[in-house]
Length: 256
Image 1: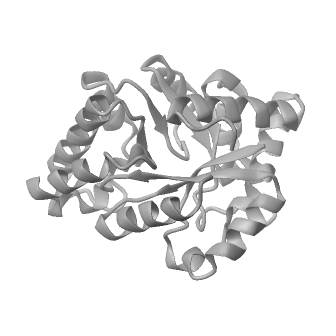
Image 2: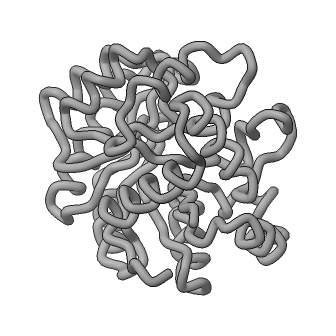
């Protein structure tokens, strides 16, 4: 069994044919999915989807690219939603200096508040990091969550070890399958299976040979196979260990 720890079934591209994409994933033994929210609308829709399907869970939070617009009342609403039984994580949140270099302080503030909520509610935090590796690390070092995930990790193998030393998991997605992607492959090689998760980030970042096309959870085994090949181990070992990691980290029902 595989668990897609980061999928945007709440994205219109997938949501409009929700049952189709869920069935497609199930046919490939992807039996559990975590739908990730990042603003008011997608948070609500993630919960709505999780309520409908027993094997789907939600993570909710505020993406760094909207940090400049987040007010205290937004955290009041988020905290209320965190009490929902199908919410198993906080995020996608973090730092993104690719899309927004002008509101660094606001991004750090909103990120820190979500870290505090993750500690308060004992939920893992799902961390987005783009063109902000050093500042993300320093923020996490100063305010270390109890548990969390470096989502679709794109940093170096050296920094991956530093994030693991903070107690975080490394999650790998489609880029680890790209033929010219040296860095993700190096990360897959050095990160222990004990610290590893897998994800699609669908509908984005489809793995090879579907690169550039729309992604969905049925492609998750391609990511697991790439990691297995890099590590020289059976795909079944990657499936088993990443599933065990996800079940424990997100406190999922083991009988799904």
